[in-house]
Image (tube, rainbow, N blue to C red):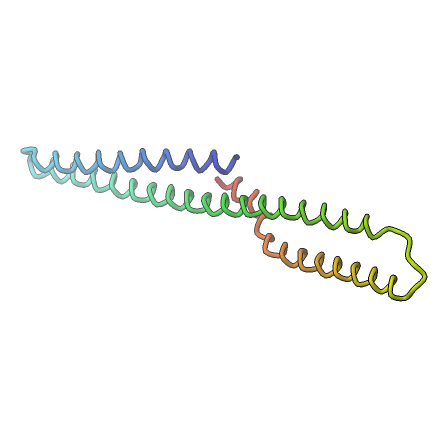
Amino acid sequence: ELIQEQLNKYSKLNEECVQVGSDLDQLDKDGRKMLLSSPDLLTLTELLSGLHDRHSRIMMAIKDKTRSLGEALKKCKEAHEKADQSLAVISRIQAEIKELQKPVGSKVEDVQGMLDDYQKLLDELKNWKNGLGDLEGVGNLQNIIQQQ
């Protein structure tokens, strides 16, 4: 939610920055139409050039922040989805383990079937754990939020 809030703020800033850019362009056009002396025209040109430069730097900073927030939001959503999937996997495995906690028969076949079921659950848990390895970047989300 915090990342989405920040992203919305930067999107609004981006819109305002685009508006300021068009205002600067209009000022530039209007300045060319004015009948000014050479020193005044030079001063106006320098001022507008400085404003355009600062505007470009601010625009780039806003775009960079928006891009990094978008990536952070995507990672956060992926982490949330993985957490939901993990909860479902853990619940299902717990139910299967509970089902396997029944008395074992005296025959080798009964024990072997139960061992196979436990091995299958263990393999599934290992695969699930390996699938969580790509969430290492999620810990950096807090750093990204603090930077914004």
